[in-house]
Length: 272
Image 1 (cartoon, rainbow, N blue to C red):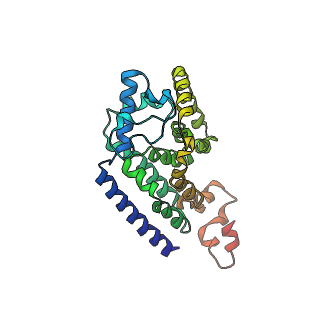
Image 2 (tube, helix red, strand yellow; image 1 turned 30 degrees about the vertical axis):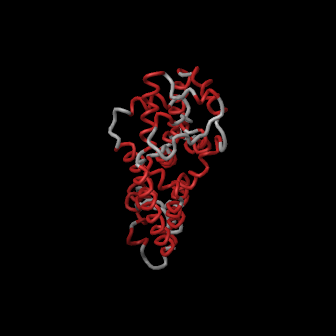
Image 3 (tube, helix red, strand yellow; image 1 turned 90 degrees about the vertical axis):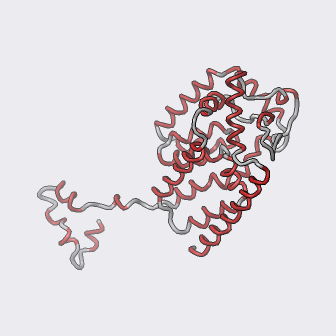
């Protein structure tokens, strides 16, 4: 497992460096972040993030791909992202990467995945889409952070609503009350923008192949927090404090002292 972890880690680093070279050569480093900020501009100036050609007839999802001509790129996101990106334009660009990466890092540190999970986690770095998400500033960074946060707190999983093609992941936090509160807030925002949803339906209907399945190549990255959560280890603080237990049981807990439990032949008692 250690050898596989090292091999996949080295291969993932190699792929990431090669993909960075491609982004630098094309001059498209951070292109997705720039596109999202342009979505915010469109909404602020015109009340919609969609472009006229998206309503005129069939169009390709990758218009403008490989360039920084973000003003011509189609918006494939639901209308609720418009006001959010309009506000985000005034925040430091670095936060777009720093916040989701910090959440994912915190989740991995909290769960301390078992050794068997690390080759699987690092194998996702070999898939080019993972490196591309990082260098482009893809929304997938926020989706994977939402999945990780949803497994911990519940409500962050609602961020998946911004990318319906990955909708099943939104249910990760459904058992938490905070998830329902966040879902209600997003629903209220959606109702306030009700006319835009008919535009969105037209935009999705005109989208050519691969259509709504264009995000399937991003699934390996989204499985990282899921695998880490399945392989999580209990924190050391969860071990029983026998001294505290002895104090909580006056009269009946006098035999629960550590020195008595640690005697030879009392291992079963200590375990219980």
